[in-house]
Length: 219
Image (cartoon, rainbow, N blue to C red; front, side, top):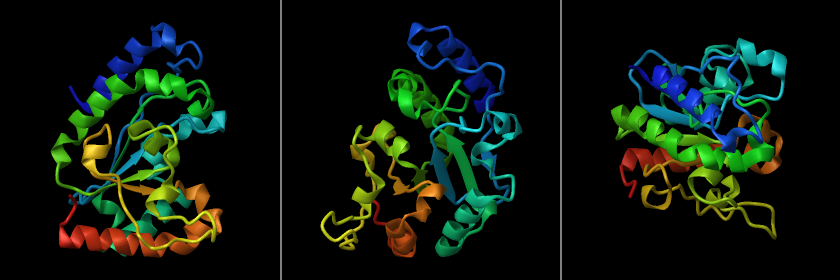
């Protein structure tokens, strides 16, 4: 049984639970497959779930993060890849939650926390084939689910509240400090690149990540 089939079984199981009532799982839409670039996988990208705000567009999503289509997020991922010396063909992207909720769960994060343990177990099984590969997360909800509720991307990018700039002491989420038990580098989701801080410091954080990967000192 593959990951998608296991995710379908998990979705159906969680749908029947009372803790799903505040934001029911949508069984009318399929579980979304991971995106596999088709080449040698060298980077994992982790998202939250596929429940975009535009309800009509949900039925057009067939792969995680819509990376099988030419769009803004694929351009963003391409930018990340180029900085790391790889290409989109070297990407494996998946979500913590591989099914749709009735509405975007940002306002019902408690439902995600209820459903996290089972989805995390499935995710760890899925990623066991890529144990030594670097990983990035997209968006703050992923950090909050895996670390703590107040987690922010800017913390890892060493944001200075007084100056609105970075002090340059970048960091990443270490395995011993998160529920996934894997090192990962937190990135903002693509729409947040409109913010000056993230737009200006994306190349700097990518340089930091590249150095860590190349020196193989992820501790």
